[in-house]
Length: 309
Length: 282
Picture (cartoon, each protein chain N blue to C red):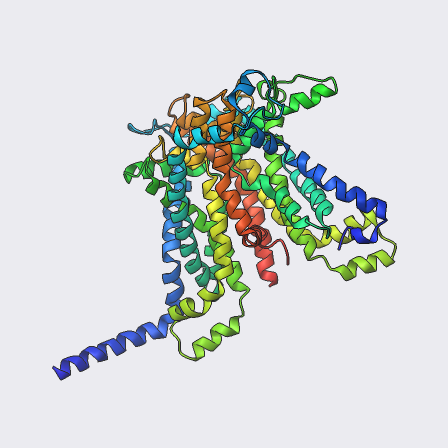
């Protein structure tokens, strides 16, 4: 009995010391294991699976048929694909307006007066609300018969314009709705950034006679660089991910003129246009490659930052 | 501080600024204010074409009553809650551990794994859609809250790990070294030293994830259908199909759907903003 216990504790000792010796190198992997597992199964592996599925004709249920790059060849001649691509580009460019607009509002609110904290949080409001609700609200806002938008432009003798029913205006109308919460987000980023601006530098610049735009451009904006970088990242991603607003406000219409790649992909794979999983995956791959360009840039910036630490 | 502090400007400008603030706010929130007013107008106002008049009588009780007692809204709200809370707990728990590993230990693949999480967090959802939907079907979790929760946990872990790792990097490292010299086991360092210091980060992430997931629409329509499992964002769109022209009910429904994240934001404002603006100041 006593020898057995001894042996056991010796074994434990041994075992423990092996673990102890390697504790520092093993522990991080134990801690990361669940997160890596989840992330692999649901995020990383599906990316590669999508690449694979894009080479098949598949309705999501039956057998897959390997068709090589046929889906991509079809995409090449698909006018709806080019409409989506063009709209993605418009989104990408116009969505960036959220950055200067956010900076402008942040500067406007960067004062210490009574109740300013409440003002700041109320200005941030649109970001906290679901895009689905924002979409509904803006659909009414644009309504040609009673919408606020047409009521207001009616006062100056314009309209009515059926923003969401007109192929020329529809994408711009949706982007305007998207800019509302996005500007709020950029505003919060800049308000935080402005808090950290060095007052001594401002004072020094003021003594040198800088003010207004010059002060803003040469002294304040450079100090806001981290905020601008994050605003840029979230805005680009937001623009390329735009889906909810389009789905809620127009469902891609009229005549598919408000589609973007993310929406067109969904339409092809899961909606009335039939269950073409392979074709949908091919569209998703194109969108992913566009995003990859930005992701690589973001990661490179972060890498430089890490090196600098 | 930039621009010039208002206190140092002429009196007239101070008054202009003070009076312009509320006007700017009203203009900024005009669509929302309109919806709030819609939601308390009686039905009769709309059929009479009185969209922009003030409510002729207060119809708020009736409108909100209908939303709560004669529609599926309460069920959707409950679903949202049952999806959002487990997701927040799960994602934050995984990220605390992964963030600890990536923030404290030096090993060869550290930066690569970190970047894997960051990059995964940026991908467009559509590249995941078909395989994830397929996987969920295979697991028998299609159209269940569990299926949605599992995916959300996995995806949010990317952002949460980024956040946690950067937060932990900012903690004083000598504290950990000192504990090691004392011979404290690594997992104890995590539980008794690092975890208590992470409380503000945990609060920030819980609030953010709650809001993100509550507001999610895409995955709700990809992985679920029907009233048993869909969250309120998907619910409000089917509500829309049902009550298309009943603006008073739709407005009340929209406000009910938007309220929980708004309430959380106001209660936890400091944490919420700290979470969103991570890295915006250096």
